[in-house]
Length: 428
Image (cartoon, rainbow, N blue to C red):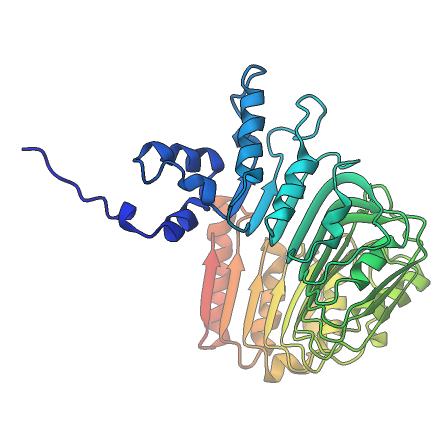
């Protein structure tokens, strides 16, 4: 007897089915059209349209025109629903390499005409592709441009009144039009420059009261010497990330709302650069700080971080980082969680180091990544002095099986001899 299987999914309302289809690659969404007559044209009403390299896999010169016509109909046909997202990514192939003559600009305009909220473009070449109307669109809430070396210039009438998220990656900015763009995004909350570079620019001036999240990740591969001053006036900032080879200077407004910062500083090898780096770290109201440095600078110039309760330290490539770390901990009287990720050098006299007050009164959790055999003395120092420590996490992924067994036994002995009631977590 044949079993009758009830098709419950097809009984869902069309808007719910279209929402489900929006999570599928476009090829898979189209294939659902063969399920039944109800599904035949559902894919054409999805509100999220994403094309990646997989969409073009298997295409030949004979059917490339069919693919272009399909995209044109999908985006440009009348009476279509409003778009939530339009995305082009190039994991496998390039959409604009000149071989296929895709109408990228037309597709973007079609998405804009449908009131798209998010545009995400990952393209290797943007010259003459981005229509000017992209930067005056009132419906855009999110704009992400991965331009792979493109030099951006923006029209004088740029205005994105509803834009909340603006991300650039692998891009170059050679004039002040980018600052004009930012200043005309009146509700901008999330701004990111990832592996970008500013040339022919003396000041990077970010004046955005609405900004809550800001990433400034400079491309340090080719442009290691930064010739500009960074000015940030964002009093409502909650998250700040800066990867930098130390600019000519920083002017930071008071960030009373700042909760988390990730600061990575390179090439801090002169007195001037150390002074500038110290000024950058003076995000005094931060509650969580992740700091990566490869040079020592004077901790005595730093303020007291009264609000700091979480600190992650990544120290690379300089001697004395252990002593520097303990000196820095003296600036964090209320620290509760400490994460360490750096290679410890044998020979550090841990027992001779003065104990920071946070170890005596507040520190409850320590996590040590990339544990090696030289770190036993450091662990002993923290166990002896962290009076109210509740949890110790040790990651041994860098050790051999034999080293892991030996280190585990040493740690267990240390914890036992410390007579502390704490939870030891060993990640092998």
